[in-house]
Amino acid sequence: MAGALAFPLIVPVVLMRVGLPAAMLSAVLIGTAWFVLMLRTAEMPGHH
Image 1 (cartoon, rainbow, N blue to C red):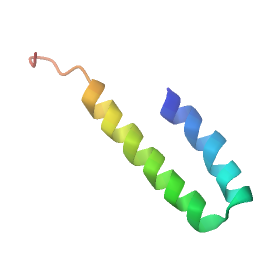
Image 2 (image 1 turned 180 degrees about the horizontal axis):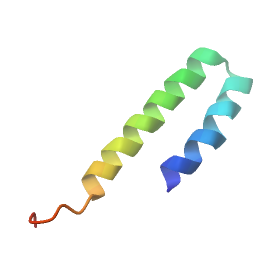
Image 3 (image 1 turned 135 degrees about the vertical axis):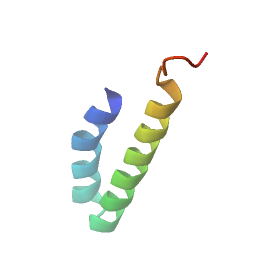
Image 4 (image 1 turned 60 degrees about the vertical axis):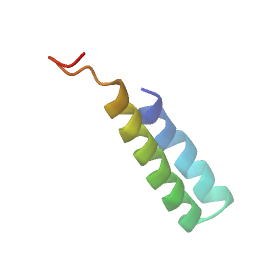
């Protein structure tokens, strides 16, 4: 849920204040962190 909210809130702010390269980098970092957290917290059936 936090990842879904972080993209539309953080990336435009970074874009307006810092610029496009920083906004792209923040989008990649947020996406990567979100993906890793989703994998680490996923409940896989049959794995304990």
